[in-house]
Length: 127
Image 1 (cartoon, helix red, strand yellow):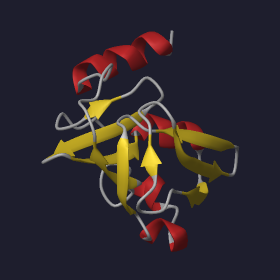
Image 2 (tube, one colour):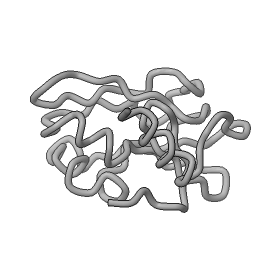
Image 3 (cartoon, one colour):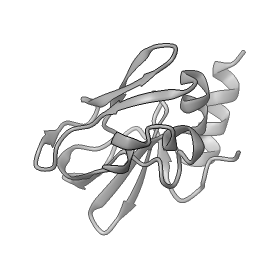
Protein backbone atom coordinates (compact mmCIF):
# COMPACT_ATOMS: atom_id res chain seq x y z
CA UNK A 1 0.00 0.00 0.00
CA UNK A 2 1.42 3.36 -1.01
CA UNK A 3 1.57 6.12 1.55
CA UNK A 4 -1.01 8.78 0.67
CA UNK A 5 0.51 11.97 -0.74
CA UNK A 6 -2.02 14.22 1.06
CA UNK A 7 -0.25 13.92 4.43
CA UNK A 8 3.15 14.29 6.08
CA UNK A 9 5.20 11.62 7.85
CA UNK A 10 7.57 11.32 10.81
CA UNK A 11 10.69 9.21 11.25
CA UNK A 12 8.83 7.38 14.05
CA UNK A 13 6.16 6.33 11.48
CA UNK A 14 3.22 8.57 12.34
CA UNK A 15 1.28 10.47 9.69
CA UNK A 16 -0.46 13.83 9.97
CA UNK A 17 -3.06 15.33 7.68
CA UNK A 18 -3.54 19.08 8.07
CA UNK A 19 -6.83 20.80 7.27
CA UNK A 20 -7.85 24.23 8.46
CA UNK A 21 -5.65 24.33 11.57
CA UNK A 22 -6.68 20.82 12.61
CA UNK A 23 -4.31 17.87 12.32
CA UNK A 24 -5.52 14.28 12.08
CA UNK A 25 -2.85 11.84 13.30
CA UNK A 26 -2.37 8.11 12.79
CA UNK A 27 0.34 5.52 12.25
CA UNK A 28 1.63 4.40 8.88
CA UNK A 29 1.08 1.16 7.03
CA UNK A 30 4.72 0.30 7.79
CA UNK A 31 4.20 0.91 11.53
CA UNK A 32 1.11 -1.29 11.77
CA UNK A 33 2.91 -4.07 9.85
CA UNK A 34 5.81 -3.91 12.33
CA UNK A 35 3.42 -4.01 15.29
CA UNK A 36 1.36 -6.96 14.12
CA UNK A 37 -2.18 -7.45 15.41
CA UNK A 38 -3.24 -4.41 17.45
CA UNK A 39 -5.21 -5.40 20.57
CA UNK A 40 -5.47 -2.12 22.50
CA UNK A 41 -5.06 1.59 21.82
CA UNK A 42 -4.57 4.17 24.60
CA UNK A 43 -5.27 7.74 23.48
CA UNK A 44 -5.41 11.10 25.26
CA UNK A 45 -8.74 12.68 26.15
CA UNK A 46 -10.05 15.74 24.34
CA UNK A 47 -8.67 18.89 25.91
CA UNK A 48 -5.23 17.45 26.64
CA UNK A 49 -2.28 19.54 25.45
CA UNK A 50 0.37 17.65 23.50
CA UNK A 51 3.83 18.82 22.48
CA UNK A 52 5.28 18.14 19.04
CA UNK A 53 7.52 15.10 19.47
CA UNK A 54 5.91 14.23 22.81
CA UNK A 55 4.17 10.95 23.61
CA UNK A 56 0.61 10.98 22.33
CA UNK A 57 -0.49 7.53 23.45
CA UNK A 58 0.27 3.83 23.26
CA UNK A 59 -0.60 1.04 20.86
CA UNK A 60 -0.48 -2.49 22.21
CA UNK A 61 -0.11 -5.41 19.85
CA UNK A 62 0.41 -9.11 20.34
CA UNK A 63 4.15 -8.38 20.04
CA UNK A 64 4.74 -5.24 22.13
CA UNK A 65 3.51 -1.91 23.44
CA UNK A 66 4.68 1.02 21.33
CA UNK A 67 4.49 4.72 22.03
CA UNK A 68 2.91 7.03 19.48
CA UNK A 69 4.48 10.47 19.16
CA UNK A 70 2.70 13.71 18.25
CA UNK A 71 3.86 15.09 14.89
CA UNK A 72 2.36 18.47 15.87
CA UNK A 73 1.72 20.25 19.13
CA UNK A 74 -1.64 21.56 20.26
CA UNK A 75 -4.86 20.60 21.98
CA UNK A 76 -6.48 17.22 21.38
CA UNK A 77 -9.98 17.91 20.05
CA UNK A 78 -11.01 14.30 19.41
CA UNK A 79 -9.80 10.76 19.94
CA UNK A 80 -11.05 7.93 17.74
CA UNK A 81 -13.53 6.22 20.07
CA UNK A 82 -14.08 3.40 17.56
CA UNK A 83 -10.63 2.05 18.48
CA UNK A 84 -11.73 1.17 22.03
CA UNK A 85 -14.03 -1.56 20.72
CA UNK A 86 -12.21 -2.17 17.43
CA UNK A 87 -8.42 -1.65 17.81
CA UNK A 88 -7.93 -3.82 14.72
CA UNK A 89 -9.02 -0.82 12.58
CA UNK A 90 -5.42 0.43 13.00
CA UNK A 91 -4.28 -2.67 11.08
CA UNK A 92 -7.14 -2.77 8.58
CA UNK A 93 -7.26 0.91 7.60
CA UNK A 94 -4.35 2.91 9.09
CA UNK A 95 -4.97 5.89 6.77
CA UNK A 96 -8.75 5.94 7.18
CA UNK A 97 -10.89 4.46 9.95
CA UNK A 98 -7.75 3.70 11.99
CA UNK A 99 -6.89 7.37 12.65
CA UNK A 100 -5.92 8.07 16.27
CA UNK A 101 -6.55 11.70 17.26
CA UNK A 102 -7.37 15.14 15.92
CA UNK A 103 -5.33 18.02 17.28
CA UNK A 104 -5.95 21.77 17.02
CA UNK A 105 -2.42 22.50 15.88
CA UNK A 106 -0.42 25.35 17.34
CA UNK A 107 2.42 26.35 15.06
CA UNK A 108 3.57 24.72 11.88
CA UNK A 109 4.92 21.18 12.05
CA UNK A 110 8.67 20.88 11.56
CA UNK A 111 10.88 18.05 10.36
CA UNK A 112 8.13 16.13 8.60
CA UNK A 113 8.51 14.33 5.28
CA UNK A 114 6.21 14.22 2.28
CA UNK A 115 5.21 10.78 0.96
CA UNK A 116 8.15 10.55 -1.48
CA UNK A 117 10.70 11.45 1.21
CA UNK A 118 9.08 8.96 3.61
CA UNK A 119 9.29 6.17 0.99
CA UNK A 120 13.00 6.98 0.53
CA UNK A 121 13.47 6.96 4.33
CA UNK A 122 11.83 3.52 4.57
CA UNK A 123 14.02 2.16 1.77
CA UNK A 124 17.17 3.45 3.50
CA UNK A 125 16.04 2.17 6.91
CA UNK A 126 15.48 -1.38 5.60
CA UNK A 127 19.07 -1.72 4.31
